[in-house]
Image (cartoon, rainbow, N blue to C red):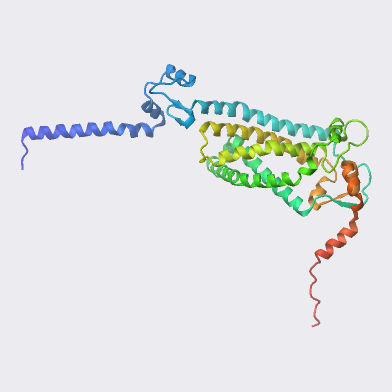
Length: 353
């Protein structure tokens, strides 16, 4: 069958028109596949005047910034502010605070050394921490360390581990850190509230706490600084956890559960608050860990076994010692009681052949 010339011409024109229409319709896809072209396609003719208008908060029919509903049509100006705060202030100064605290601890240890007991141990023990107390403490402490490490990895890890380990390992590492941080954070919050409620009565401020601070915990002046069950420094740590710690938990929950009506601005502020307070608590925690382990003889024994020596109690918590000194027991007696509670497995006697 032959096609007349007019019909052939019409067919060619129709085919050319369809081709041109298809190319035109394909431009959005092509532009969006190229990040460099996407902005030009989505916001044509973006010049300096337009960006000044957006950043100044001016609005018109084409360029709107409805922050109350968190629907940024052109640019999230507050997001840029958050980025500047995080990258120019929080990250570098947080690193300075952490490094500065570690340097101060090292200098303190170099100058003063470990605080040894001034008198010999008596061999008589006082129960300071129950099994429940120690379980709560070590659970909260373990979660705090995991959250601190994963949080530091999220904030600084890309500058350290990504160049060293490569993109693939780094991707798995950051993904794991994110999951641990997000899921263990609420558990830490619940346990922290429990431990704060349990030890509240021991951490109420007393007059002798002020004297403890004036004497620098016994490092300044003569004589021991009076202290009850908790000394002034321990009470400061407690109230930091009860204030800054609870704010870290609250801000973390805002970030963990973004589907409860939070605006984008709210989450940005929550992120800044969370990072600043968490970095501060981590720095103070360095000092708490040092004093409770390497810095003071006998401290770690109390949280490991529940018992402290009489000499330690007299020198560090003399007011508490006066209240409980009648409950002191000999080490041998405690060892005997422990052996009775946990008798060794006795193997069956060998049978004669």
